[in-house]
Image (tube, rainbow, N blue to C red; front, side, top):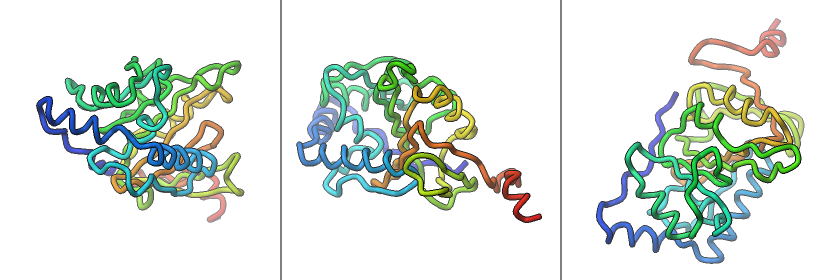
Length: 227
């Protein structure tokens, strides 16, 4: 797994937190731009879109969907280093959204690498209330050039599309398959790079590993084509 360069810890102290809260309060145009980027990413799985160029540079890009979409009625969770609550506090003050456990969050974001187990714990909603499934935005090093190639298919994908993101957790594809196994219930995922590019993996998308350079494994479909 390629390491993810996450946002440095914010400066300690009330003054530093206050400055971050100010930066995290997106203007209407910024929030609308983030919302459009999220919708576009989820409508066209595997394609690259971008958060607004004027998004605050002090805020990790993976936090932008939470800052743009959360409100008083939306439970949120920020995944950060153990013992740290700085970004969670910033999001709570900037959005007034309640902080809840990961399993209850409608919107979640990570400012450090996530684990496969955390993906499995995401809220999935139910067949009767699929809107209760979570949206998680997680940081990745890049959206291309990774050691594992995935093939996407499903709504919004014309035929099939191959992607190879860098910096996803080990076991990501299997964990996500569990998180979307009860479609239309399930979780929607967004992959965000440090430079503000974003890619969507909605619950309706099928993800298959077709090649993995770290293990030398190649999917049966690829092997059959070579034969």
